[in-house]
Length: 323
Image (tube, rainbow, N blue to C red; front, side):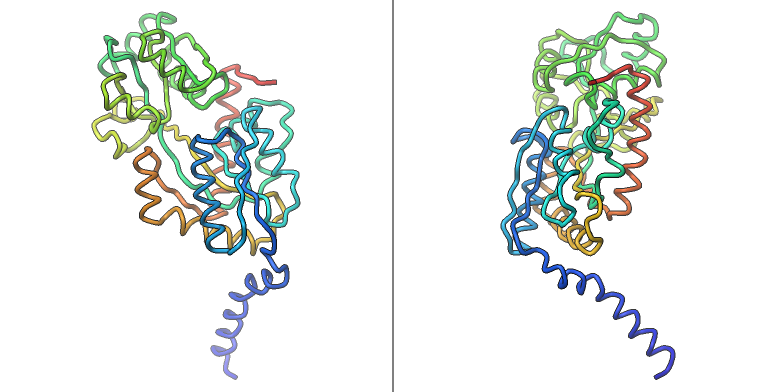
């Protein structure tokens, strides 16, 4: 047997190792649980159900979505982190759970970088700066210029202390060298309601929830926290295009408990990437302002490291804490 033939056989054998490993573990042989650490109906829940359906269809087992909310998503995340690493418990959650909480809680019950096996970042969406329809500010530059000259005269709303939109506002103030008073609300909906009522001067919202109100004229969009325009609002300028280097995306991802066998992680990744790239799913996500990412486990792991480090700094500078 010549060297070339031996090499080809070796490569083929190596490619079959993950399948052999799965065969040995007889995975999956029981129902799979997808924990979403937020109430039903939100972005994490919607995407979690897409993941659950895809896994059920491909693996021919029952896949159940369990909404376990509380403590900014940390209750559900902790449950997954402490679950057996056998491929039967997964976490579909957002930037807050995987990155921001590490800076908000000094005694967080899980470590996002040590307690999870990354599977895939699924989607991302920029935030959009919105003001009341009656606001005198027509551009982001006008608002920034006013804030610099009149520190503390304006207020900005958020979905709550430590939320991604709150911390986006803090980054915005630091980058522009300006100041506005933070008004935390109990959720994004009441915050946007007060923006539309003119009770707060501006806020940073995820693109999807804000887009219908922007299109109906109830709020005005000044800029996107992105480096490229969003197809959902193509006429809204990016922050970078007006001289504000603010690039912030909110995102959703799926992970398993640390120690989950690599063969299972790879199989899960194959299924969710295929599902997210399906034309109907991509179209549905685009209609809600999301861009499909569908990364590899390695790409998601490196991305999460960068995000954790970035948001720890942002949280520290904002003074936010949920302990």
